[in-house]
Amino acid sequence: MGKNVLVISGSCRKGGNSDTLCDEFIKGAKEAGHDVEKINLADKAIGYCRGCYACARTGHCFQKDDMEEILDKMTNADVILMATPVYFYAMCGQMKTLIDRTVPRYMKMKDKDLYFIMTAAETNPKNLERTMEEFRGFMDCYEGFQEKGSIYAVGVYERGEINGTKFINEAYEMGKNI
Image (tube, rainbow, N blue to C red; front, top):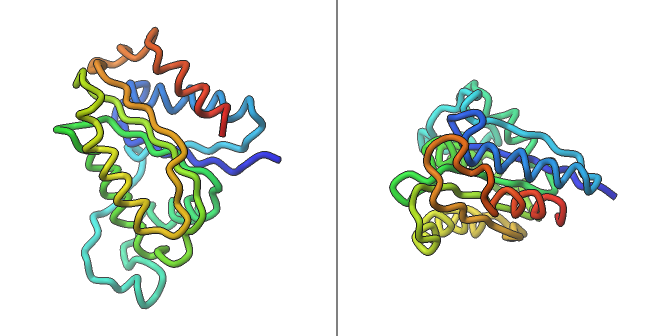
């Protein structure tokens, strides 16, 4: 039985390196029989968390933007892939903003399998562990979130440099083996 898979691309460059790996993951997941939807954060209007915690009382953020729809999809997903380009050893701002805005579903989002893709010009994969720790901090805040796989795609900067690397196949296989 196929799973409901949500792919969240933090790349601002359509067809950029992390976005390309998302597409390869999707190919593998679809081939394995899963239902997959992709969200490009660059196409969404998501305001910063204001820290007012009105959502703790109402279950909804007071901001009227695209986040409510994304939260619905995250809540309904069995599997979530989060992909980000890495800037200064950290996830992109769009991804961090999305994570901060998940607070309204703090008690409802449970039991998810999470996969991660990080792309960076950095050539030492060990240095992407800093970024992975940010994702792990997010997972630790939610009940039943489990890290199932990650790709540290290093040595890629310009759009398209990911093509022809081992990371293309790794993303495809990660999606296929959900």
